[in-house]
Image (cartoon, rainbow, N blue to C red; front, side, top):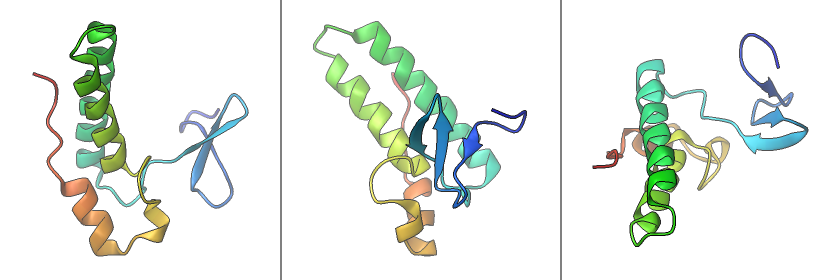
Amino acid sequence: MSDDGPELTPDGRYVVIDGRRWRATDPAIPAERCAELQRILMAWRRDVRRTRGTDDERASRAGVQAAKVALGERGTPWWEQSDEERRARWETNVPGPS
């Protein structure tokens, strides 16, 4: 890993962490929106930890999924979407946990 973040595959579609490939965040997301979505994702991950084993855990996991889809890390690969589809994806309202 470099100072700029995790290693990317040559095509830029995946990050490599501990030898495993993970889908990279859509590089077209404006920096401010990307940071906001990452804050929401981290809040949902903390909520998953807090709700583990309760009836609320499913909702917390759905929040993680929604944030990761907005970031382009899950769902339809960002490199297979048109510019309009990509913009609509990251502009979707992803609420944080309550």
